[in-house]
Amino acid sequence: MDGILGLGRGDTKANTIEAPSLLDALSSSKLIEKKLFGIHLSRGVDGLNDGELNLGAPNTNRYDGDLSWTKTIDNENGYWEIAISNAGFDGKTTDLNDRTAILDSGTSYILMPSDDALALHGLITGFTQSEDGETFTVPCSTTKPIQIKFGDKAFDVSTKDYMGGSTGNGNCASNIVGRQVFGEKQWLVGDVFLKNVYSVFDVDNSQVGFGVKKEGAQSSTSSGIPSSTATAVGAESATARPILPGSPTAVNQNSPQETEPVKGEGGRAKAPTSSFALLVALALLSMFV
Image (cartoon, rainbow, N blue to C red):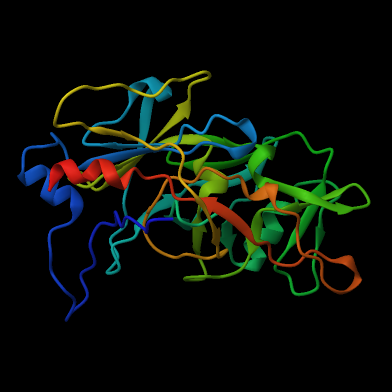
């Protein structure tokens, strides 16, 4: 791991250092047309190793149809925060329609208050909850996706991402964790969701766009300088903490379910720990400075 590339919106707290962001610098240097970036996260289990960061313009080859846009919510920390319309499973909804998502590619899981996690898992027949209310299991035979809705568009979250390793007795750990990281109605939404969509973060218009992944999509190609696309390959993996609050920071290659869950007393699943690879091609950015 070479480091973390911060791509937040910029905080508004008093007595903090004021400096141009990376997108500010690229825009003022006329190296990108728009202050936005797109992220495609690749699953380790798929073996593609094609995580991608696009600067200045989205890679339209990565998604079908149009992007679905949601306005950001103002916060002093500069988080990419948007409203959640609802969440559910297999067509059944929870009516958790007054929550917000703080989006962070540096977080492997989805973390939410325990009651919200219970409401969501409660739609899955055969789920279990740990005594501390934080971790859950679902039957390994589960095939239906979880849905999270932003605006009027619901996006599927595949079992490849929300289902982790086996905990025994036909159950698998859930990568949706009942842990409150921010406010009681704020979720920290990481790679468990982001691997299922192509995500665009638009600074100028204060909005986030999601596109449904295109099957068999290829990375974009460009020649010369400037380049609006950085495609990362061959990065080293590193150990990640389950919680890394903040704005989207990096392209994640490794799926959280690839690490066996840690079991506590009585064989109950404990809070998961996984590895992730930061696959932003930082060396490519040297051409901009």
